[in-house]
Image (cartoon, rainbow, N blue to C red; front, side, top):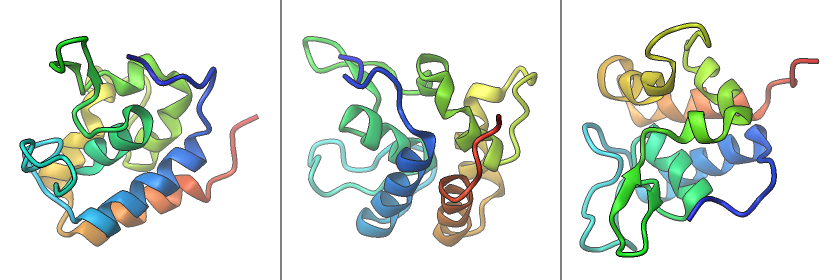
Length: 128
């Protein structure tokens, strides 16, 4: 089920995603660790955004509880693009929608790197 908000505020989503990582912990290579225990999982950057948008790090879920696509968040919610851009993504890039998780898994050296990128988006001025 897609998030119920008509339009999401990327700054609010980014700030809450940073809070998710600080609260739960950070991981690489998966949207969220320990799927069998949804209350106690670590999240990657995209998993944290998904947790804010969908209520879980794995993205949109179907009626049977299976992930539809946790990597399409920036396609489903284009207003969140400034979050990906804070990680260095270019909207014209073919990997734009996956850049956040690629940054998380390859370039980030620590949870703080990811938190800083999310806070950067949270504190940015919207383009006019």
